[in-house]
Image 1 (cartoon, rainbow, N blue to C red):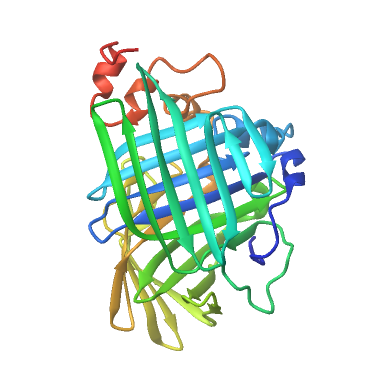
Image 2 (cartoon, rainbow, N blue to C red):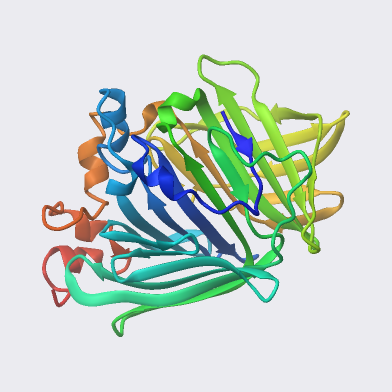
Length: 359
């Protein structure tokens, strides 16, 4: 279902030709007050409308044919701006990807792993553009001796405890800035998400003191106990796996769209609690995807991080695809008339829909 792979192996350009495959860089920043962001630059993002369904029909699209950029901004644990845009993409190099007029670079500079993004995106209903930049900096992660260079779904954390800062604006009416602890990884695979045998996953990361803790729980299709990954990332670059994890789950709750989740999760080692994850209210709520800014406790320390829950079998179902299209900007023409209600800053969306945004 998943392989933790070496951080010194570059992304594979060949993934662009993989039918139904995917490759993405992920970065997030979050502070103790719940201000933060998530950015994803992707080829073949499985959540794009029509992508997973094409693979299920036996006619998968090439990952390289569906480049996209996603940016989500939060203040006080509430979403304040959102973009998910399909746009012409260019794999400039293994360290530089271009999506429309936005550019992401992930490289090691002067002994530090840096994710840098310059964002320049249109926003529906206005002639103004969302512009800004973010940077995440940390020591390059040193891979463990048993980490492979290959695998099915290759999950690769790239930076150890990192710091990030960002600022964005839209015209004269929207300003956003954040600085805090940060995280950066890569995911890539040559087969469709639905072919990996994953029934559900719960991933997260959080700062605990000087370290970063990361957990990844994967339930197999058809049910059964989860496979549990636990990592401790240290400021000197070391990766320490947490072996022998067992999982205790609170009673499940239902989101607005019916996706079930746990208010808190405990991860134990030999009967002792390693981490307690208290998810709180989802900051993103959808029929197949939930995002949280959880408070995490362990070893007498606590920190606020990021977590996500995904149900691959609910991705891109026929009944929900028209609603997903409302919040995704397609390449070229053909955007939903409702896109202004979902794209850009939350404040002013109704006015942009009605044509009062200067577009």
